Amino acid sequence: MTTLSSLLLTLVVLTDFAILGTSRLSTCIRAIGAQGLLLAVLPLALHPGWSLHIIGLALGTGVVKAVALPWFLRWAIREANVRREVEPLIGFTTSVLLGAAAVAVAFVVAPRLPLPEREGTLLVAVALSNVLTGLIVLTSRRKAITQVVGYLMLENGIFVFGLTQAERVPFLLELGVLLDVFVGVFIMGIVVFHINREFDTLSSSRLEELKEP
Amino acid sequence: MTAVTWVALGLTLVAAPALPGIVNRTKSLLTGRRGAPVTQLYRDLARLWRKGTVYSRTTTWVFRIAPILLLATTAAAACLLPLDGRSALLTFAGDFIAFAGLLALGRFALVLAALDTGSSFEGMGASREGTFGSMGEPALVLCFAALALATGGTSLALMFSEAPSLWSADGPALAMVAGALLLLTIAETGRVPVDDPATHLELTMIHEVMVLDHSGPDLAIVQYATALKLALFGTMIVDVLVPRAGLPVAASLAVWLVALGAVAVALGVVEAMMARMSLARVPRFLVAAGILPAFAIILLLGSAG
Image (cartoon, rainbow over all chains, first blue to last red; front, side, top):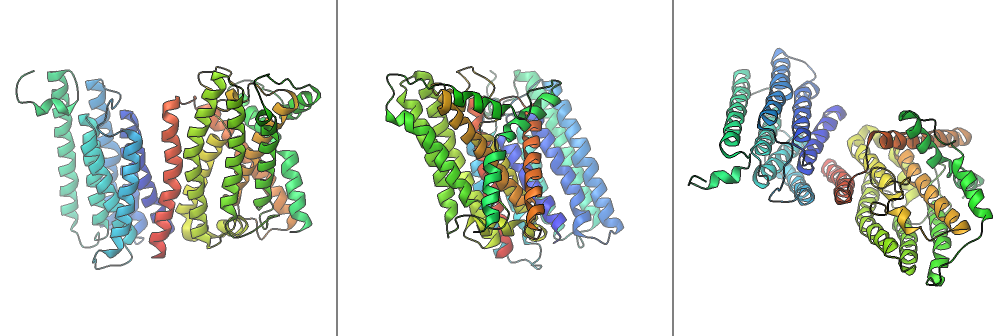
């Protein structure tokens, strides 16, 4: 575990907090894009002997998570004409505090997990905290776009976890996961667009009712 | 406790009023104005010092004693910090609690004085200062806790003289502590984006509204104490960032003054770039200042265990 990689992982957690604490959707998207970029550099910092596998992984992650997805989400908010998360189920300050608690839990739990390698504790801790904070965003926000961002945070956590095993996971599998995420977010974006056209709002709470409004 | 620490304390007391000047000058230059000279606060203080003091008939001794108490506590807090990067005038185990307590006592005196005037505006400012102060303090203590955990020291002198040598081992944690200290500096000394020292619009002021009734030498003392507080927080940031324990004495002091100026320039850049936050968002800002050291502590515990 080099200083550079631990710095990158720390920044990943800080972007989580940025997403938890902001009400502006464009800031949310910028933060998730920054997180994608950090995750793209991370494999290069973790495995210094740059094999073709690692370089491919970094490039693929960078293109999908730092360029394509933020661009697409930005398109979605421009089309749907939303700017802010108006009234989240849990307030911003509270969700930042909840996120801090989740990160603390992740860092307490991570060293106790029975894993084959010991040196990846920080990776596992960051992976868990990303999953937990993603879950908080996913459950506490009303706007569909922010929920997509929460889903991406979840997926990023799983990606970080996968990095502990990067040498063993076949490249094809990782490409498949990246593609899945891309398609998933793409479909969500289209759904968001349609929710907006149908109800004139992006609030997913309107989907809870079965009857026509 | 050597002559150097006294020299450092003297330098702090003399140089402190220049820092707000540097902040304002940077801001002016970046926003396309010439701005007041860096020494403006010295002139203001001299002008105020020559003036008489006016006391409202509703005020009592609480109002009169507040500026003196504020200056005394801030100066006492300065004695606890290792200004020359090695040792402080006063050092004992757990003195960081005393440091936070002294600053809180000064704030308490100022809040009481504001309430003593019986003016609704000043009461509003006092309530804001109290609320935001109570949120900033846990963040400050968490910063100290993170530093104590990283260095193993229990006094400010030990913590701050050892911290910069740990950058290779605990870099991310130290960076977050430094970031949190910068946020706290902005909040505690009433700079943009938390408070705006230039405005006199009652609805948005925090620090300035509290001292509306102070005049003459009293106002000079309050302004000087605020500048001194800025110097103290700036010194803490410098002590975390810049390793100067190994330097010769004169070089260490020179590096410290230059770095202090750099912190002031950084504050000026922040002021030029950002608008004042709405009051409702200030708690979020302070929570962020608390989350950073808390996360640093988690990281340090994780790397130790």
